[in-house]
Every structure is written in structure tokens, then in C-alpha cells.
Amino acid sequence: MTKDLALELAQRVQRIKPSPTFAVSARAEELQDQGKPIINLGVGEPDFDTPEYIKQAAIKAIMDGRTKYTAVDGTKGLKTAIVNKFTRENHLNYDLNQILVSCGAKHSFYNLFMAVLNPGDEVIIPAPYWVSYPDMAKLADANPVIVKTDFAAQLKMTPAQLNAAITNKTRVIVLNSPSNPTGMAYTPDELKALGEVILQHPGIIVASDDIYEHSLWSHLPFTNLLNVCPELYDRCIVINGVSKAYAMTGWRIGYAAGPAKIIAAMKKAQSQSTSNPATVSQYAAEAALESGSDCTEVMRDAYKKRHDYLFGEFKKISGFNCLPSDGTFYTFPCIEAFLNPQSALTNDIEFAEFLLTHAEVAVVPGSAFGASGYIRLSYATSMENLVTAVHRIKKALASLTK
Image 1 (cartoon, rainbow, N blue to C red):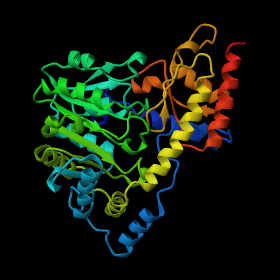
Image 2: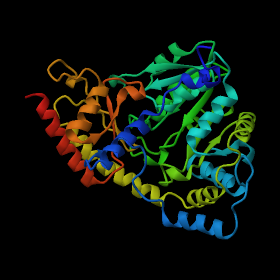
Image 3: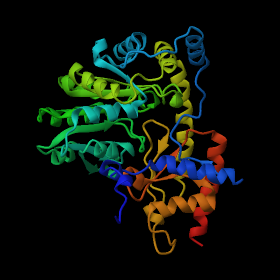
């Protein structure tokens, strides 16, 4: 036998790639361990600590012995807090059987794709996109259909582009606003125009990724697709979580709200993978959601201040073409002007490697997000780090023109 069939990997796992953002962070940490003063602007998580009252809620849960299994779809207390959150903050009404708590928003997306996609189905994903969307579609034996946006449209999908991408195989449309990696958000009018296209195609499900809802500073108040197009209520899944808003990335709690039939199918998929999310984390998340938004506003204001500094400095760099973000903690400049024979850099991956080597600043190449010729920088770090990073980047780029 020339090939060990026992070691043959499944085709589904061979269709996907490891997370590029985790790869960048691992490379930065490796260099830091070697003693290099790397500033990591590639990581996509808040630099703030989880608020004390949330930690105390988790400690109390432990001391009260709340460390056993819960229902697969989450505790009644957390699901009630999620329902109340949607009513209070988003003016959306759900019953408890329309809520599923999962191990992060990524897990919610995975459950959705497992529940509604069949082989050959198509998932429309605007690019730039969060790195996991296409690969999760592939794991579900579906085909990601990438809609490339452009700078002129502020890196947002237009109704005409959406309409052109829809076929009789389209099953899911992914909307992420504000966006990772671009930081751009759809206005209410833009969402309504997209919704009017979707309404013409019954049977298509919308996956609304609202994870950066509380990191928005433009187009306020935050608007969900259902706020401007309530007719889509029966075929829209709203996905969110506590990771970004409450600096709880490691607690791994996300949630989904939508039609009871789809939520029940997602619950069934989850029951055969993780079962319930971590019990202690659920009690912490309940405390977070019941607390309101004071701590989220503090973080948002800090991100806005850092964004304004970074955007202002990038505008001074000849060759950087950058849109002001509407929210999140990302900026996504186009760096195509630096990709030329004179610089000996031919793509954004080489540009990111150049910054890592010559500026000791880690960023993520835009091609990881389906947008070659761009880079993503996270400003979820201290202002001191950002000032140093900008100085290093400017110095390194100056050497390209000598």
C-alpha cells in the first residue's frame, strides 16, 4: 500500500485554512519571546480587563455551587437577560425559545450554518469579511460567494451588487455592521435598501453579525436590519455576544436570536458538539447584560480617541489611503501605492512581513479578509503603543523611498 488510508484527512477540513489573525498573533508572540519589542496590532480583542462586577458574579456562581451542566441553550436567567437586552437596546422582541446561547458568536455562526446549509447552497459574503465566514460555509459543504466591495462605496456592499450575487442556490446572506476588518457601518438607509432586495427573494436567511454594536460612534444609534426592515423578522438571525462589548473574549459566550424553528435546529446541532456553554461564564454574562452600557461606553470612547489619532497620522503618510472608521477597534488602510518594483514588495503579505521585520509592528494582511492590497491594524492597545507604532511605521516606510 502506497498510502496510509488510516491517516487520510476528511475533505471538509482540507478545504479550510487556519485563522490568519491567530497566525499573526502567534508570530508576534514568538518574536516577543525572542526579546524583540514587537507591538502587536494584529490581535482582535479589547485590551481592557473584564469589569470587576462581572468577575464577582462568576466568583459568586462558583461559591454557590453553580458548576454543573445547564440546559443546552443556556440558563433561563441568561436567556431572559438577552431577551431584555434586545427589547431595551434594539427594540426587538423575542421569546425564550427564540434564543440560543453558545460558546461565542463564532459558535453561533457555526451552529447556524450547520442547521440551514446543504451541499451546494450558497452563502453571500461581502469582502472585506471576517476570516471565519467563508471557511465555516465550506465546513457545511456550502459555497461562499464573495462580493468584492470597493473604496468608492466605503467598502460596503451595494444593493446592486447584492442583487447580482443572488441565485436560486442562495441560502444565507451575511451582514456585519460595524465591520471587522474595515470598521465601517451601514447607515439605516443603506440597510433598508439591502433589505428591500432580500425581500424579493423568499427563502433566503440573513445572518446579522452585531458583535461590534457597542463600539459604534458614527450613524448612531446602532441600527439592526430588522429595525428598518421588520418584514424580515421570520428569516433573520441576529448574532451577538459579550466578548467585545464587555472585554470577555476568553469567557466564550455568544448568542443568537431568530425564528424558533431555526433556533431549535441550531440547538440540536449544538447539543451534539459542545452541549451547554461554560456554566460559570453564563452567570458572568448575565451580570454583564443586566448592568447596562456604562462600561461599554468607556471602552468605546477610548477606541474613538485612539482611532482619531491613528487616522490623523495615517492621513499624513503618502501612499496610505484610509477611510475613517465608524466603529470597532480596527482601521483598514489601502497600501497598494507601496507595492511596486521600487519597494520590491509585491503584495500585502510581503508588506505586513516588511512592517514586522523593519518596524517591529505586527499587522494582518488584507488578503486574509478577502481584500488584497490592504492591511488591518487593531488599536485595541494603549495610546503609548500606538504612538510608538506610528513612529516605527513612518521610519520603515521612509526607507522604502531612499
